[in-house]
Structure formats: structure tokens, C-alpha cells
Image 1: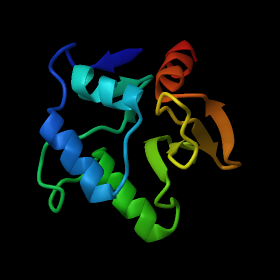
Image 2 (image 1 turned 30 degrees about the horizontal axis):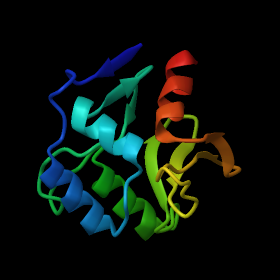
Image 3 (image 1 turned 90 degrees about the horizontal axis):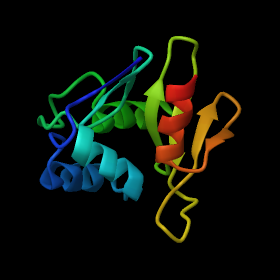
Image 4 (image 1 turned 60 degrees about the vertical axis):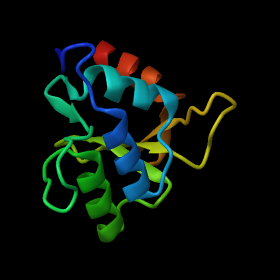
Length: 131
């Protein structure tokens, strides 16, 4: 079951820039495309982290900045690991921002194990939808 926001009603470019600046990262193009076009959503009841377009110092929940600042503080993610989804089985999916291909895309890994799950955020979405 896939529940994304309505196509074309996603996150503004300004908020994407704010989030990247706050986390000191560059999001891969496919993640930016998804944010701009869908804004957020869930796959099989598990939220794919997005930008809530709320002040980062007060936002909670599945906001990408909130989640990643907490994970960095707790030592469960580094500055080059962008957590994009977690589940109740203790699995965490993250974009490996230190491995950028010529198109600006980065692989998605699953932890525990730091095993490559997909070659890009788009492939991550396709695989998750197919599960």
C-alpha cells in the first residue's frame, strides 16, 4: 500500500534548501524530485521521511531534519548517512551521501549490516513498493 501526497503538491524549493543547509548535506536528485512532487508519504504503513515545512527547532515526527539530528546525536547515523526510513523491526534505511555517482545519485543502505539495498532513492522506492 502506497500513500504519497498528491502529485505536484510537494515541498517548496526554499524548504529543501533550508533542510540541506541545516543538515549540511546535498540531497540526491531523485530524493529532491520526490520531495518536490509528492512531499512525503508511506509505503506499507512505514513513513518515508520528508520535510514538514515547519520550524526545524520545534518540528517532530518524520521530518528528515528532526530524525537525522536525533540519529546523529544518538550516534546511530553519521553526517554522511541520511536516514530516510525506519521500521519496527529495528531496520533503518539511509542514503550513503559519501558515494555519489556522476548523476548525483547515492546508494541506499539498510542497517543493521550496512548492506546496499538500492543504487538510488528512486530504486529504493520501487523496491519498497514491490515488497
